[in-house]
Amino acid sequence: MALQILGGLISSVAGLGKTYIEGKNAVSKAKSEAQAAVIVKAAESEADWEKIMAENSGQSWKDEWLTLLFSIPLIMAFLPSMVPYVKEGFIVLEQMPDWYQYTLSVIVAASFGVRSAVGLMKVKK
Image 1 (cartoon, helix red, strand yellow):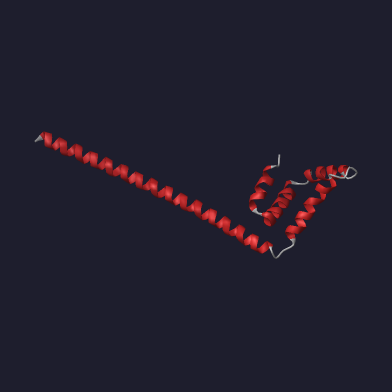
Image 2 (cartoon, one colour):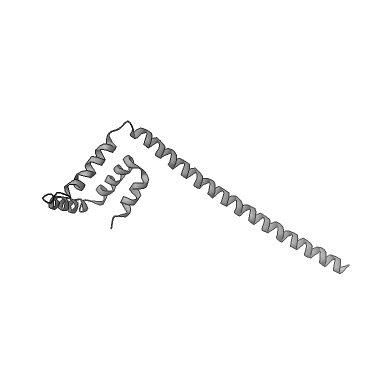
């Protein structure tokens, strides 16, 4: 009789432990699924934004303007008489306030896409 009671007690405790572990696993699985859903939604939102920006850039000249503007120092760097001006220009730009440099990065990002701006902002010392 005592053995049956002890066996029943052990069985009950084991059942409670199993239920507790199953509950913890269910909570963990639900959290993981929620985090995965947030990551997927964020990726979809970013892709949608980039698609809209690409569609809108077809109606704007700002991409061409920025490409031309960024090409000027590139072209001047191959003209020996212009090299000192290019060097001085970049020295002056490097001394601009951080807010100006970041704003320039954001402008370029808005035109060419967010991913390219992330690299520009990490270049800062």
